[in-house]
Image (cartoon, rainbow, N blue to C red; front, side):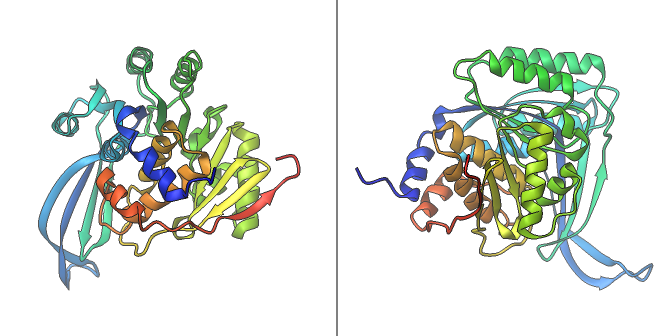
Length: 345
């Protein structure tokens, strides 16, 4: 039988997305956008004056991963933490308004993370962060672990969206991996990592750092293909993950199916306005594809394709299932280059 073409394999998999449930654990944020235009420089200093025309609030961080999954048609569940403050009430209302299944533990001792982006003429001018990266309290951590133990059964995959804001810790991740290991079939656990937490990702199924994070996790300065391969091999050694995807921005994705098998998938972006949230899109599409039965390489092509769509939009964007299905017919088989093929791979 002649094997199906890549677009056909992806289209068949997308139709199964609504049957899949994916749990998202991670740092929840409030994304705040001020959008306008610049017509002059401030007389008070050499900075542009942005005249605000529009203001918006959306779910960010792990909330953006959940939005990406929902847009693709997957049924996500969010487990996270926010402050017991006005921004915290806003993120809870946003989750409810979007119909998301969520368990959001309120913490009176920490602020809700807010990222304010000021955008003019489709370009980000500046970002202002209000946040803490202190670990959540033992009480909050216990509440999160209890929520994970309660809701994990019945999910087909898990995403850990780690922004190093204090939620993801060794006890939380160990509890999650233990719970996943007790399930049959065991759901894959994908982690969008942050460098300070490198040592707690031991034994996860897939890590998805960007190239800067990969270099820092490996402790080396990355230059070119050789540097990427060296960094990936060092990450395997340090974390013992089962697979690794390094996102390379405009240069696509480096897929480490194993330490001895590395391939490069070129970008599919036609234009780049804003890379905000592109990593969230990649891990959401990867998890959706893998849980729906795609091989890892095909899931990476799907993720690369989705990322190529969102970077052509301003702000944290998502790809709808209809948008994906409409575009699959125009999807070309990418030129996948083998960077490393060990004899034992």
